[in-house]
Length: 405
Image (cartoon, rainbow, N blue to C red):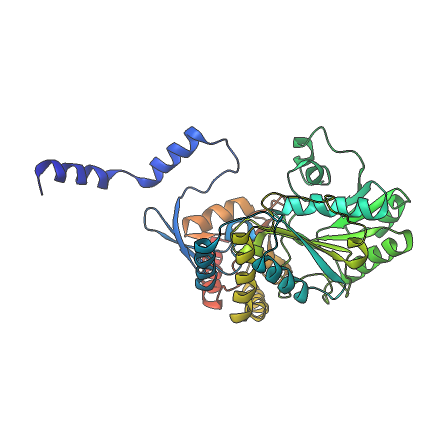
Protein backbone atom coordinates (compact mmCIF):
# COMPACT_ATOMS: atom_id res chain seq x y z
CA UNK A 1 0.00 0.00 0.00
CA UNK A 2 1.37 3.43 -0.94
CA UNK A 3 1.99 6.14 1.62
CA UNK A 4 -0.88 8.21 0.17
CA UNK A 5 -3.28 5.25 0.37
CA UNK A 6 -2.28 4.61 3.96
CA UNK A 7 -2.83 8.28 4.81
CA UNK A 8 -6.28 8.31 3.20
CA UNK A 9 -7.23 5.08 5.00
CA UNK A 10 -6.10 6.54 8.32
CA UNK A 11 -8.09 9.74 7.68
CA UNK A 12 -11.22 7.72 6.82
CA UNK A 13 -10.85 5.71 10.01
CA UNK A 14 -10.86 8.89 12.11
CA UNK A 15 -14.07 10.29 10.57
CA UNK A 16 -17.07 9.84 12.88
CA UNK A 17 -19.77 8.36 10.56
CA UNK A 18 -22.59 9.50 12.85
CA UNK A 19 -21.35 13.10 12.96
CA UNK A 20 -21.15 13.25 9.18
CA UNK A 21 -24.65 11.77 8.68
CA UNK A 22 -26.06 14.16 11.29
CA UNK A 23 -24.43 17.14 9.60
CA UNK A 24 -25.82 16.23 6.17
CA UNK A 25 -29.35 15.53 7.41
CA UNK A 26 -29.50 18.79 9.32
CA UNK A 27 -28.15 20.71 6.32
CA UNK A 28 -30.65 19.35 3.80
CA UNK A 29 -33.76 18.19 5.71
CA UNK A 30 -36.55 20.06 7.43
CA UNK A 31 -36.70 19.45 11.18
CA UNK A 32 -39.18 16.82 12.38
CA UNK A 33 -38.82 14.86 15.61
CA UNK A 34 -36.10 15.36 18.19
CA UNK A 35 -33.82 12.55 17.09
CA UNK A 36 -31.91 9.96 19.08
CA UNK A 37 -28.14 10.59 18.99
CA UNK A 38 -27.43 7.63 16.69
CA UNK A 39 -27.61 6.60 13.04
CA UNK A 40 -28.89 3.12 12.26
CA UNK A 41 -27.09 0.97 9.69
CA UNK A 42 -28.95 -2.34 10.03
CA UNK A 43 -31.41 -4.32 12.12
CA UNK A 44 -32.31 -7.92 12.93
CA UNK A 45 -35.17 -8.98 15.16
CA UNK A 46 -35.33 -6.76 18.23
CA UNK A 47 -31.86 -5.31 17.66
CA UNK A 48 -30.46 -2.48 15.57
CA UNK A 49 -26.82 -1.73 14.80
CA UNK A 50 -25.52 1.82 14.38
CA UNK A 51 -23.04 3.14 11.85
CA UNK A 52 -20.51 3.06 14.71
CA UNK A 53 -21.09 -0.67 15.22
CA UNK A 54 -23.02 -0.38 18.51
CA UNK A 55 -26.01 -2.69 19.11
CA UNK A 56 -29.22 -1.39 20.69
CA UNK A 57 -32.21 -3.32 22.00
CA UNK A 58 -35.19 -1.75 20.22
CA UNK A 59 -38.33 -1.75 22.35
CA UNK A 60 -39.95 1.07 20.37
CA UNK A 61 -39.92 -0.37 16.85
CA UNK A 62 -39.84 2.95 15.00
CA UNK A 63 -43.27 4.10 16.28
CA UNK A 64 -44.71 0.54 16.62
CA UNK A 65 -43.93 -0.29 12.97
CA UNK A 66 -41.43 -3.18 13.22
CA UNK A 67 -44.03 -5.75 14.25
CA UNK A 68 -42.31 -8.81 12.86
CA UNK A 69 -38.90 -7.58 13.96
CA UNK A 70 -36.33 -5.81 11.84
CA UNK A 71 -35.71 -7.52 8.49
CA UNK A 72 -37.75 -10.65 9.17
CA UNK A 73 -36.42 -13.21 6.63
CA UNK A 74 -39.88 -14.13 5.33
CA UNK A 75 -40.82 -10.50 4.74
CA UNK A 76 -37.47 -9.68 3.13
CA UNK A 77 -37.73 -12.66 0.76
CA UNK A 78 -41.29 -11.71 -0.26
CA UNK A 79 -40.25 -8.12 -0.99
CA UNK A 80 -37.22 -9.23 -3.00
CA UNK A 81 -39.35 -11.57 -5.09
CA UNK A 82 -42.04 -8.94 -5.71
CA UNK A 83 -39.50 -6.22 -6.51
CA UNK A 84 -38.03 -8.41 -9.24
CA UNK A 85 -41.50 -8.97 -10.78
CA UNK A 86 -43.28 -5.61 -10.53
CA UNK A 87 -42.67 -2.77 -8.10
CA UNK A 88 -45.91 -0.92 -8.71
CA UNK A 89 -49.01 -0.31 -10.70
CA UNK A 90 -52.00 1.65 -9.44
CA UNK A 91 -55.30 0.09 -8.50
CA UNK A 92 -56.65 0.90 -11.95
CA UNK A 93 -55.68 -2.73 -12.65
CA UNK A 94 -56.47 -5.96 -10.87
CA UNK A 95 -53.69 -7.61 -8.90
CA UNK A 96 -53.32 -11.11 -7.49
CA UNK A 97 -51.16 -9.98 -4.57
CA UNK A 98 -53.65 -7.21 -3.71
CA UNK A 99 -56.51 -9.71 -3.78
CA UNK A 100 -54.50 -12.00 -1.51
CA UNK A 101 -53.72 -9.19 0.96
CA UNK A 102 -57.37 -8.14 1.12
CA UNK A 103 -58.56 -11.72 1.60
CA UNK A 104 -56.05 -12.50 4.36
CA UNK A 105 -56.89 -9.29 6.24
CA UNK A 106 -60.67 -9.70 6.02
CA UNK A 107 -60.45 -13.38 7.06
CA UNK A 108 -58.72 -12.35 10.31
CA UNK A 109 -61.05 -9.46 11.09
CA UNK A 110 -64.32 -9.73 13.04
CA UNK A 111 -66.94 -11.28 10.78
CA UNK A 112 -68.90 -8.10 9.98
CA UNK A 113 -65.81 -6.30 8.63
CA UNK A 114 -65.96 -7.58 5.07
CA UNK A 115 -64.42 -4.94 2.80
CA UNK A 116 -61.00 -3.25 2.74
CA UNK A 117 -59.61 -0.06 1.21
CA UNK A 118 -55.82 0.15 1.01
CA UNK A 119 -53.99 3.46 1.34
CA UNK A 120 -50.54 4.59 2.47
CA UNK A 121 -50.54 5.59 6.14
CA UNK A 122 -52.50 5.83 9.37
CA UNK A 123 -53.54 9.42 8.90
CA UNK A 124 -54.79 8.64 5.38
CA UNK A 125 -56.73 5.66 6.72
CA UNK A 126 -58.39 7.90 9.32
CA UNK A 127 -59.19 10.56 6.70
CA UNK A 128 -60.92 7.94 4.58
CA UNK A 129 -62.72 6.42 7.56
CA UNK A 130 -64.32 9.80 8.25
CA UNK A 131 -65.21 10.15 4.56
CA UNK A 132 -66.80 6.70 4.60
CA UNK A 133 -68.92 7.72 7.61
CA UNK A 134 -70.06 10.95 5.99
CA UNK A 135 -70.93 9.25 2.72
CA UNK A 136 -72.82 6.44 4.48
CA UNK A 137 -74.84 8.66 6.83
CA UNK A 138 -75.22 11.92 4.91
CA UNK A 139 -74.06 13.71 8.05
CA UNK A 140 -70.91 15.75 8.61
CA UNK A 141 -69.78 15.96 12.24
CA UNK A 142 -67.25 13.65 13.90
CA UNK A 143 -66.87 13.06 17.65
CA UNK A 144 -63.43 12.18 19.00
CA UNK A 145 -61.99 12.30 22.53
CA UNK A 146 -59.72 14.26 24.81
CA UNK A 147 -56.22 12.81 24.55
CA UNK A 148 -56.82 11.58 21.01
CA UNK A 149 -54.25 11.51 18.21
CA UNK A 150 -55.40 10.56 14.71
CA UNK A 151 -52.69 11.93 12.40
CA UNK A 152 -51.27 15.10 10.88
CA UNK A 153 -53.25 15.62 7.65
CA UNK A 154 -56.07 18.16 7.59
CA UNK A 155 -59.13 16.20 8.74
CA UNK A 156 -57.15 13.83 10.98
CA UNK A 157 -55.31 16.60 12.84
CA UNK A 158 -58.62 18.46 13.23
CA UNK A 159 -59.98 15.32 14.92
CA UNK A 160 -56.98 15.27 17.27
CA UNK A 161 -57.30 16.73 20.77
CA UNK A 162 -53.87 15.84 22.14
CA UNK A 163 -51.47 18.64 23.04
CA UNK A 164 -50.94 21.35 20.46
CA UNK A 165 -51.33 19.16 17.39
CA UNK A 166 -54.72 20.62 16.50
CA UNK A 167 -53.24 24.11 16.71
CA UNK A 168 -50.55 23.07 14.23
CA UNK A 169 -53.33 22.09 11.81
CA UNK A 170 -55.06 25.45 11.69
CA UNK A 171 -57.24 26.40 9.93
CA UNK A 172 -59.02 23.26 11.11
CA UNK A 173 -61.61 21.31 9.18
CA UNK A 174 -65.02 22.24 10.66
CA UNK A 175 -67.42 19.78 12.22
CA UNK A 176 -65.19 18.18 14.85
CA UNK A 177 -66.52 17.70 18.39
CA UNK A 178 -64.65 16.45 21.46
CA UNK A 179 -65.99 14.27 24.27
CA UNK A 180 -64.13 13.36 27.47
CA UNK A 181 -62.27 10.07 27.31
CA UNK A 182 -64.04 7.47 29.41
CA UNK A 183 -67.12 9.67 29.98
CA UNK A 184 -70.19 8.28 28.19
CA UNK A 185 -72.41 11.15 29.34
CA UNK A 186 -70.20 13.63 27.49
CA UNK A 187 -70.67 11.49 24.36
CA UNK A 188 -74.44 11.45 24.75
CA UNK A 189 -74.56 15.25 25.04
CA UNK A 190 -72.83 15.66 21.68
CA UNK A 191 -74.27 12.72 19.72
CA UNK A 192 -77.17 14.30 17.85
CA UNK A 193 -78.62 13.84 14.36
CA UNK A 194 -75.75 15.84 12.76
CA UNK A 195 -73.03 13.38 13.84
CA UNK A 196 -71.73 10.90 11.26
CA UNK A 197 -69.24 8.99 13.41
CA UNK A 198 -67.61 8.56 16.78
CA UNK A 199 -63.94 7.76 16.31
CA UNK A 200 -61.67 6.50 19.09
CA UNK A 201 -58.34 4.85 19.73
CA UNK A 202 -59.14 1.78 21.86
CA UNK A 203 -55.88 2.48 23.69
CA UNK A 204 -54.74 6.11 23.60
CA UNK A 205 -51.06 5.43 23.08
CA UNK A 206 -49.56 8.91 22.77
CA UNK A 207 -51.72 10.22 25.63
CA UNK A 208 -49.94 7.86 28.03
CA UNK A 209 -51.39 4.46 27.09
CA UNK A 210 -54.89 5.18 28.42
CA UNK A 211 -57.35 2.30 28.14
CA UNK A 212 -60.92 1.99 29.43
CA UNK A 213 -62.92 -0.91 30.81
CA UNK A 214 -65.00 -2.92 28.34
CA UNK A 215 -68.20 -1.26 29.55
CA UNK A 216 -67.09 2.06 28.05
CA UNK A 217 -66.71 0.67 24.52
CA UNK A 218 -70.04 -1.13 24.90
CA UNK A 219 -71.76 2.09 25.98
CA UNK A 220 -70.34 4.03 23.03
CA UNK A 221 -71.50 1.27 20.67
CA UNK A 222 -74.98 1.50 22.20
CA UNK A 223 -75.14 5.28 21.67
CA UNK A 224 -74.11 4.82 18.04
CA UNK A 225 -76.74 2.15 17.41
CA UNK A 226 -79.51 4.21 19.04
CA UNK A 227 -78.71 7.38 17.10
CA UNK A 228 -77.70 6.14 13.67
CA UNK A 229 -74.02 7.00 14.12
CA UNK A 230 -71.10 4.92 12.85
CA UNK A 231 -68.39 3.75 15.24
CA UNK A 232 -64.77 3.93 14.07
CA UNK A 233 -61.86 2.26 15.87
CA UNK A 234 -58.52 3.86 15.07
CA UNK A 235 -56.36 0.74 15.38
CA UNK A 236 -53.33 2.24 13.69
CA UNK A 237 -51.33 1.23 16.77
CA UNK A 238 -53.46 -1.50 18.37
CA UNK A 239 -54.10 -3.48 15.17
CA UNK A 240 -52.19 -6.32 13.48
CA UNK A 241 -51.45 -8.25 16.65
CA UNK A 242 -50.13 -5.52 18.92
CA UNK A 243 -52.52 -6.42 21.77
CA UNK A 244 -52.16 -10.19 21.39
CA UNK A 245 -55.20 -10.36 19.10
CA UNK A 246 -55.33 -9.47 15.42
CA UNK A 247 -57.64 -6.59 16.35
CA UNK A 248 -58.78 -4.89 19.52
CA UNK A 249 -62.21 -4.83 17.82
CA UNK A 250 -64.28 -7.81 18.86
CA UNK A 251 -61.89 -8.76 21.67
CA UNK A 252 -62.68 -9.43 25.30
CA UNK A 253 -61.01 -6.12 26.21
CA UNK A 254 -63.50 -4.36 23.90
CA UNK A 255 -66.42 -6.19 25.46
CA UNK A 256 -66.95 -7.89 22.12
CA UNK A 257 -67.69 -4.55 20.44
CA UNK A 258 -67.14 -4.50 16.68
CA UNK A 259 -67.10 -1.04 15.07
CA UNK A 260 -68.37 -0.14 11.62
CA UNK A 261 -64.89 0.89 10.45
CA UNK A 262 -61.39 -0.08 11.62
CA UNK A 263 -58.26 1.76 10.48
CA UNK A 264 -54.82 0.16 10.31
CA UNK A 265 -51.23 1.14 9.45
CA UNK A 266 -47.97 1.01 11.50
CA UNK A 267 -47.32 -2.75 11.76
CA UNK A 268 -49.33 -3.69 8.67
CA UNK A 269 -46.36 -3.76 6.29
CA UNK A 270 -43.45 -4.49 8.67
CA UNK A 271 -41.93 -1.15 7.68
CA UNK A 272 -43.22 -0.73 4.12
CA UNK A 273 -45.67 2.22 4.15
CA UNK A 274 -49.25 0.95 3.96
CA UNK A 275 -52.58 1.72 5.61
CA UNK A 276 -56.07 0.29 5.39
CA UNK A 277 -59.73 0.82 6.26
CA UNK A 278 -61.85 -2.23 7.01
CA UNK A 279 -65.61 -1.76 6.94
CA UNK A 280 -68.95 -3.53 6.76
CA UNK A 281 -70.99 -4.51 3.71
CA UNK A 282 -73.60 -1.97 4.84
CA UNK A 283 -71.17 0.95 4.79
CA UNK A 284 -69.53 -0.31 1.60
CA UNK A 285 -72.93 -0.28 -0.09
CA UNK A 286 -72.93 3.52 0.02
CA UNK A 287 -69.57 3.83 -1.78
CA UNK A 288 -69.52 4.36 -5.55
CA UNK A 289 -66.65 4.43 -8.01
CA UNK A 290 -64.42 7.50 -7.56
CA UNK A 291 -65.73 8.24 -4.05
CA UNK A 292 -62.35 7.02 -2.77
CA UNK A 293 -58.99 7.11 -4.49
CA UNK A 294 -55.23 6.88 -4.00
CA UNK A 295 -52.29 6.72 -6.37
CA UNK A 296 -49.94 4.54 -4.36
CA UNK A 297 -52.43 2.71 -2.13
CA UNK A 298 -52.66 -0.99 -2.95
CA UNK A 299 -49.35 -1.06 -4.82
CA UNK A 300 -47.76 -4.45 -5.36
CA UNK A 301 -44.74 -3.99 -3.10
CA UNK A 302 -46.92 -2.81 -0.21
CA UNK A 303 -49.40 -5.63 -0.74
CA UNK A 304 -46.59 -8.16 -0.77
CA UNK A 305 -45.46 -6.71 2.58
CA UNK A 306 -48.99 -7.08 4.02
CA UNK A 307 -49.22 -10.72 2.94
CA UNK A 308 -45.75 -11.56 4.26
CA UNK A 309 -46.38 -9.74 7.56
CA UNK A 310 -49.56 -11.71 8.24
CA UNK A 311 -47.82 -14.95 7.30
CA UNK A 312 -44.75 -14.19 9.45
CA UNK A 313 -46.91 -13.39 12.49
CA UNK A 314 -48.71 -16.71 12.14
CA UNK A 315 -45.62 -18.77 11.31
CA UNK A 316 -43.88 -17.41 14.41
CA UNK A 317 -46.93 -17.67 16.72
CA UNK A 318 -46.38 -14.00 17.47
CA UNK A 319 -49.88 -13.44 18.85
CA UNK A 320 -49.21 -16.08 21.48
CA UNK A 321 -45.75 -14.60 22.05
CA UNK A 322 -47.25 -11.16 22.70
CA UNK A 323 -49.46 -12.57 25.44
CA UNK A 324 -46.62 -14.57 27.01
CA UNK A 325 -44.16 -11.66 26.93
CA UNK A 326 -46.73 -9.24 28.38
CA UNK A 327 -47.29 -11.61 31.30
CA UNK A 328 -43.53 -11.99 31.79
CA UNK A 329 -42.95 -8.23 31.71
CA UNK A 330 -45.72 -7.45 34.17
CA UNK A 331 -44.40 -10.11 36.56
CA UNK A 332 -40.83 -8.82 36.20
CA UNK A 333 -41.84 -5.23 36.94
CA UNK A 334 -44.02 -6.10 39.93
CA UNK A 335 -42.59 -4.75 43.14
CA UNK A 336 -39.90 -2.61 41.56
CA UNK A 337 -39.59 0.58 43.54
CA UNK A 338 -40.34 3.51 41.26
CA UNK A 339 -42.80 1.63 39.01
CA UNK A 340 -46.34 2.62 39.99
CA UNK A 341 -48.31 0.72 37.34
CA UNK A 342 -48.18 -0.93 33.93
CA UNK A 343 -50.86 0.34 31.55
CA UNK A 344 -52.16 -1.05 28.27
CA UNK A 345 -52.38 -4.49 26.73
CA UNK A 346 -50.16 -6.90 24.84
CA UNK A 347 -47.07 -5.07 23.63
CA UNK A 348 -48.58 -1.60 23.70
CA UNK A 349 -47.58 -0.83 27.27
CA UNK A 350 -47.04 2.27 29.36
CA UNK A 351 -44.88 2.07 32.48
CA UNK A 352 -46.13 4.64 34.95
CA UNK A 353 -43.22 5.89 37.05
CA UNK A 354 -43.48 7.20 40.60
CA UNK A 355 -41.73 10.52 41.11
CA UNK A 356 -39.60 10.11 37.99
CA UNK A 357 -39.56 11.80 34.61
CA UNK A 358 -40.12 9.37 31.73
CA UNK A 359 -37.97 11.58 29.52
CA UNK A 360 -35.09 11.30 31.99
CA UNK A 361 -35.48 7.51 32.29
CA UNK A 362 -35.72 7.21 28.50
CA UNK A 363 -32.42 9.07 28.11
CA UNK A 364 -30.68 6.92 30.71
CA UNK A 365 -31.95 3.74 29.06
CA UNK A 366 -30.63 5.01 25.75
CA UNK A 367 -27.22 5.42 27.37
CA UNK A 368 -27.48 1.71 28.22
CA UNK A 369 -28.40 0.99 24.59
CA UNK A 370 -32.09 0.28 25.17
CA UNK A 371 -34.56 2.21 23.00
CA UNK A 372 -37.97 3.04 24.49
CA UNK A 373 -40.55 5.79 23.94
CA UNK A 374 -42.19 8.55 25.91
CA UNK A 375 -45.70 10.03 25.76
CA UNK A 376 -47.57 13.23 26.51
CA UNK A 377 -47.85 12.00 30.12
CA UNK A 378 -44.50 12.96 31.70
CA UNK A 379 -44.67 9.96 34.03
CA UNK A 380 -45.27 7.28 31.38
CA UNK A 381 -42.57 5.38 29.48
CA UNK A 382 -43.93 3.58 26.41
CA UNK A 383 -42.92 0.15 25.07
CA UNK A 384 -43.85 -0.82 21.50
CA UNK A 385 -41.39 -3.63 20.69
CA UNK A 386 -41.54 -6.16 17.86
CA UNK A 387 -44.16 -8.84 18.44
CA UNK A 388 -41.32 -11.34 18.26
CA UNK A 389 -39.40 -9.89 21.22
CA UNK A 390 -38.17 -12.60 23.62
CA UNK A 391 -38.43 -12.80 27.43
CA UNK A 392 -34.63 -12.71 27.80
CA UNK A 393 -34.58 -9.45 25.83
CA UNK A 394 -37.22 -8.02 28.14
CA UNK A 395 -34.99 -9.06 31.06
CA UNK A 396 -32.22 -6.82 29.69
CA UNK A 397 -34.61 -3.88 29.81
CA UNK A 398 -35.91 -4.73 33.28
CA UNK A 399 -32.40 -5.00 34.74
CA UNK A 400 -31.42 -1.67 33.19
CA UNK A 401 -34.60 -0.05 34.53
CA UNK A 402 -33.95 -1.41 38.03
CA UNK A 403 -30.50 0.18 38.08
CA UNK A 404 -31.93 3.53 36.99
CA UNK A 405 -35.01 3.86 39.18
